[in-house]
Image (cartoon, rainbow, N blue to C red; front, side, top):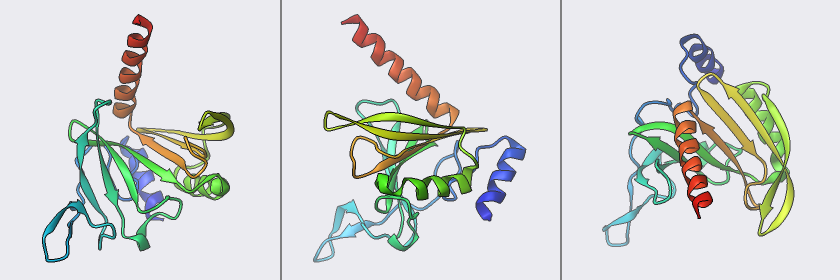
Length: 192
């Protein structure tokens, strides 16, 4: 019910809906995850794998992309049921959350995942039959897309592995950054 209220408020203001309580277009407002502690009490360079509260690991600049990527880590008991594990990726542009990348359970859970996403975002704008490439083999897949005010949500039931799918949630700002990167890469390939 809270998710529906957040979507209605977002629709009225033109702001994108919140997802997992996260606001798009703004810096993350949840705490930074705690570092793991090694035997003897020394702090590790890695973060706790089972955080007590939902938190984020700071974003890093990717070598092959103009955006930063970090993670949101959920306590296992609070991780969304359609996720594969308890971690999702943040897509950060100019210090603001502009997207989420979520590995989902495998294709055997397609209907349940699509129902959960439809409960949050409404009826999909489109459902397309596609082909994923898994280890060089073309595999039939489904792509569900929701085009909302301020967000595009895409669920692909088979990504590049049969073991998981992917939900990609992007603001228009993230879509522009991705489009510009893809266009530049295409021009570079054409120039060769």
